Length: 396
Image (cartoon, rainbow, N blue to C red):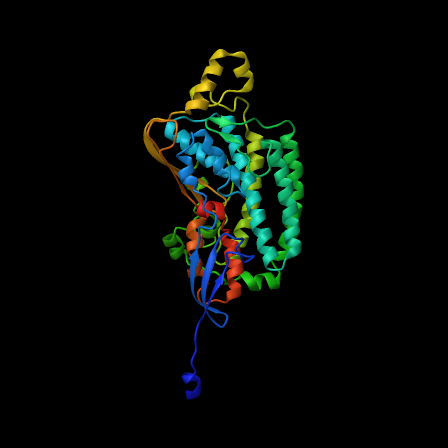
């Protein structure tokens, strides 16, 4: 370098990326310090979708919180339903029926598949792979048809109940699932051909957004982003809940912890979730889906119309809410983005004293500067896509 070059005055450029940038989807802002196209520093500003979820929970009954959970990770709301219900049931000290457990597993895995479809489709779209986007959106629509058949709604399902479920599996659900999965596997194969060995796609994601495993643990990573680092932690395996200990499935892991590994892990998790759903449909026992404990569940319309005891219990449940004993618990499930935890505190009343959520994508978003510093500004797009930051979950 010449003396003249050394003496040149240089100044970093500071720019805002978001929250109105198309990549950030209106939910986050990145304050970037750039030298040319190289990222020197980044500050993450979240909270643009904060709606006071945890405070709202204190103003409703335990059952009224359930629809709010749909709005956390609104791409896979059924997992949120299951996670909250399990936490309340743990606080009360009750265990749901075997059939209910199997149906909850089915609902959770359908939601996980839908979430991964959405993530990979959106990532492909923002990297120019429009065809892959169309294929996985089609697959997601087929999954949503199944979810609608099960719950009556495609997105904000409000399907799970404390102590049970809103309704049983509908007639023909098993056959419909088999039909949908056949088509979804064909679409998965098409996307695999389009992306996995596509040189343009690989150049945008391989060796980009690398997170070493020790740093991933220090930052609090869980889910596909942690498993992409080579660490096989999965709540369903390490702390089994419902009937996951009776399911035969693998936990896919990556090697480098880069964006390509995150993509590969999610692609394989789609297959593993389908395996779980198929096993659950084969093994599901007959029996009731709700506990016979009227003090802890809403009564059916038939019972309310025909039994005075049910009408009384229904009146008390609606007006006062169920009343778990005083205490506090933490309960976690494997969400689509990682460990989704609920910390609940009860004072013995019909309303939660405190409902704290551990959002899995919060530490992922916080670690964005670590993953992109030293890279190019274009690397932000695939990295932010592959951590799958969902504003409703992160900001609450």
